Length: 382
Image 1 (cartoon, rainbow, N blue to C red):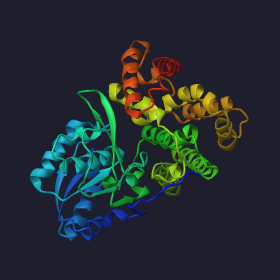
Image 2: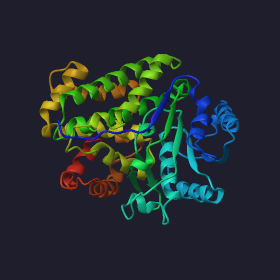
Image 3: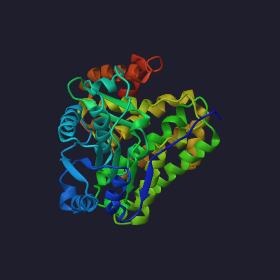
């Protein structure tokens, strides 16, 4: 195990009715006026928005509303929100929604404090030196953004889907009430399952140093996600399964499974970012297509770990059997495993390939994911 420093400053408030105390948490941090970010109008129809406003009012916290944040959030929306936040004089950002809303909130929080254009932070032209405090109420479990310091946004003009990361972007308080996630659609439940698995296996398979303890953590997360997904597909109102699913999502990307590991990369996300940047596919749906194709190519680089995955997760003996078992599970739960299911055919591959190669340079893995390799992985996913 490598030397490491692990510090996660996010306070998690987990369980039923926890969203009713959001005003108390903001007040404890001295917040007087907040930019309230959300996606669809669903939070108004189901009463969550009214509950949030009541809690803010109880603690004399003013708010400015910014809605309409889309899945695969875009930089133009972030820029608009930054302008609103500055003109309104807010001193914090509150996200109510899923990972897209929370990632946007983090980008807004950083952009408000940056004198230049916020995209400069994504392309490395400027550091994130400070940010407004971020808080959130989670309504969909998938990205793990509620307990990490990263955010991903698409620049629709350049067709680049890039990330920022800074200790300033850890949420101060994240509220996770699994009961708020019961209305998540069947499609987004299975897409979320693929996203959580992707977060777990990136380091598991690619790390140069991967302690057995961390491998066991990853395997436990995957087992939990698979089990709870199957329960929820049959019984969406099952709170216990919803809670297990939500907490597994948080654990997959809060830094714990990567503490003590080294030499890892995020190739599945690197490739998928091109799918959602060019074709606006749901992130998890893109990942469930990329993962099996990537695994079939990459298994040669770490055969021992792939055999472990097959045995520990699926009770199979060979690496190939483990990959097939995962692909079959994706098929069984109804998340896509072929590019054609996303409406992407051979004609779209040249543009997709060029975007992937750009991402490979951005992710620092261009020496591994050459044109031939990327072409092979994408072609095998058709």
